[in-house]
Image 1: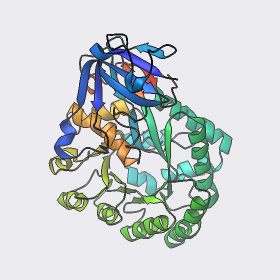
Image 2: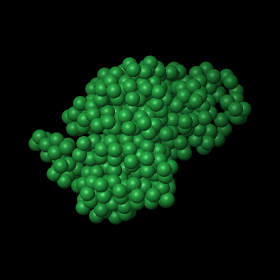
Image 3: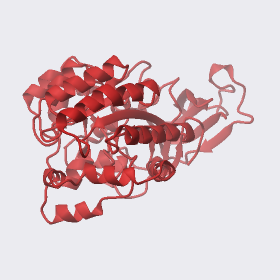
Image 4: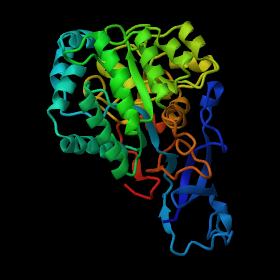
Length: 422
C-alpha cells in the first residue's frame, strides 16, 4: 500500500540521509516542516515537503515520477504532527506474571539490592517463568508489545534473562523470535543469561554455563543479535563481563551491557574496551565514564523509568551531552524495577527529572535509541528511504507539549512499516 499523509501541522524529526545518531549540540536540533505532506511507498518514506508542493496542490505528479495518487491511501493529518515512532532499545518484556509484592516491599523500605539478596527480584521471575508454558509466555509478551505500540513505539529490543537455565533461556528467546515473526513492530533480541546467578549454581559454575553452553546454543539457533551482562556488585564482575562479552563476540553476538545502576562498577570501561553497541543504566557515573566513551560507537543509554520506580538517582544526561556525547533513553520495561513501556512518559522524565530539553529528550527516544538497538539506518527519524514507521498526533501546539502534558492523550494514529495502522 502507498500512503499520502496531507495537512500535517508539523513534520518533525527530519534528518539528512546517513545520519545514524546525534551527539553533543546536535541533540538540540529537531528539523521540521510546518504545513507539510509525506509520501510512503511499500513501507518506506519516498518524499515529503510543504503542502504547497503536495500532489493535487499544483504539482501534478508525485515524487519518483509516480502518477497522481489514484488508489493510494490518503490520510488527512488534520493539522496534527507527524513524528517517527519511538524506539525502545532496552526492555525485559518477555516475562511471566508480575511482582507487585516487591512493590509493597519497596514501599516498606527495602531496596532493590536487599530484595535481590533475599532471593527475590530476578530469581522470582525466573521461578515463575520456569512454570509458565511457552504458549502462555508468548501470549503475555505479545500483549505488552501491543500496549507499547499503541503508545507510539515502533521498535523494541527484548532481552532474555528470566530463564537462568539453558532450557529456559532458549524458551524465552524462541518466544522473542516468534514475536518478531508475528508482529509488525521491529524486534531485536538480546541474550542476557548473565542477569543473575541461577538457583543451584555457584558463581563460577554459572558463568561457565553462560559462556560454554548458553552462548553456543543461542548462536547455533540464531536466536539473538546481542549479548548483554548485568555488571553490578552482587551480580557479575568486570572480569565476568569481559569473559561473557568475549564469548558472545566469538559467536557473532554484538556486546551490550547493564552498568552503573547501583554503583560505579567499571562496566562502562569494559564496555568501551569491547566497543559495545550500548551501555545502559548509568545512574552512577563520573568523569571517568564520560571519558571512556569518547570516540566510541557505544551509545550511553539511560533508563529514567527505573530511577522513577525505584526512587533512585537519575543519569547525568546533560553532562554527557555537554561533553559531546549522545544519549539514548529507553523504558527498561520489566516486572521488578520499571513496569511500564510508555516512551512518552520516558521522554517526560527525561525533561522533568534529567533536565533535558524537549528536543534532546525527543532525539534520545527516537534516533539515538534506534542507534542503541542497531536500527537507526531504517528507523528513528524522517528521511527518504527510511521505514514509514510514524506517529500522527492530534493537533498540538508544539513538540514540547508532548512531555509537558505527559498524560493527556496525544496520538491519533500509529503507522508501522508494513502499513499496519493502529
